[in-house]
Length: 606
Image (cartoon, rainbow, N blue to C red; front, side, top):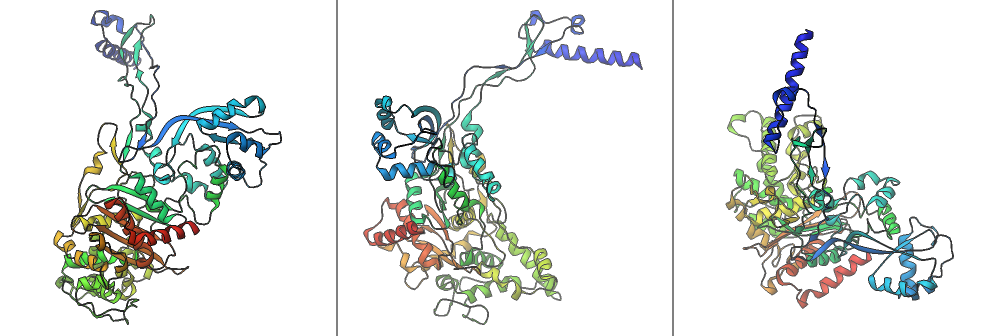
């Protein structure tokens, strides 16, 4: 046994030495087989001296949004009394600005202004301080390289680096929501951290006792500069959309249905992009962390809600595909089934049902789907309902629902579609009936969708049945986006059945439709849309809208969701069509300037 062990050890050493000799850059120096047993090589890792620079984030028009630049900081004295009036004169600020900037920088309410606050300064302000430095011996100027945001917009999208967000993360740990926010706010800066950072070069030589190299023990790593990210966002459209939502709770997602590129991504209440990393925003961060409206929640990706009547589009498409209805199918507005808030004529077709958003109409649409009894199950209606609900869910999931879309944001939520087993457990019986689950027909009950899924749903209808995964980066360095964003996904619904939805969606925006006041016909744009009013047992109803334009050649799809805002037609639809018009025309027609002003005024008030 001992002899066998020694021979095995010798064979292993010979094999390792032989491999090292094969990788030697100079074959003439390769050791002989006899020497292999005796020679020991040291594995080393040599770090190349050049440091990569973290790359930039640019919008779709190549405007720089985030870059690493010099930042100038003014350290206020820790103990000496501070004359804020004189400080304002030094910096060229009025007294209100001085007080506001200092309060924003204090780490908690009631902290003394002499806490040791650092204030960000512009180059011009730095020049003023240096000019009068002799008169201010207690002030300290410093500079450091840091990520600088050139826009206040797009905070949840742009995100932050964890190294620079440590003050925010420390603050978050002291709050009840700290863990929740720490896990979900990194944005693109975190998601693409490796690409933005680049990496240093490393060599991996095998070296003998004399310092001579004998090949490599691992593949050398090439130096790589950080790669710029060219985003899909239009920063001007993003800023405009943020003004429309402002302090309201909700979201707006606009994307190009032809590519899946996200044009605007708003999570409201909004806050400035630099807030979570700026050294003089500790007070603002404390307010955001404790605010009852949870502005730091990334709503489009993380918050899944019942979609309301906008989900009637999905139910109609599935019913058409399964033959449960035809485009010309009519149903009476039987309010003994479910209440209908709209006073309208009989919905004699699918187009009319969508135009009036008739709840009893769609109650009966889904009833035909769920209560259909196949020949094979003619004696078992319970089993038929289970089979039909599972089939309904299978078709709905092909829209990218009840699963993550794979958007390039951290912690995307999957939403939820109920299964037969879910209802078996929730109702404590397999014999549940359609009447106990009918809320699915109007997008209520157990259905939950995210804002990204809502916008993607509109894009699918715009494309008549297919989509590219929504994404925020259209190019990495000199190349394109990630391969998974160029893969076309198809639903299980035929394109003809999506086409059958379009007349009803355009009718929604025309005279007598639920959103006729939000038409863009005066500027030659036909909008296809669907309003939704989501019932809310804990307060005012939520307002929803999905749509796209132009209807026959879609270039933008939009989803809007405003919490406790009431009717989708009066609250959500105007925001959506203004964003559509801004994107398609570049400006808002005078006719709608009053809308714009009213919406922005309300956004500021809330």
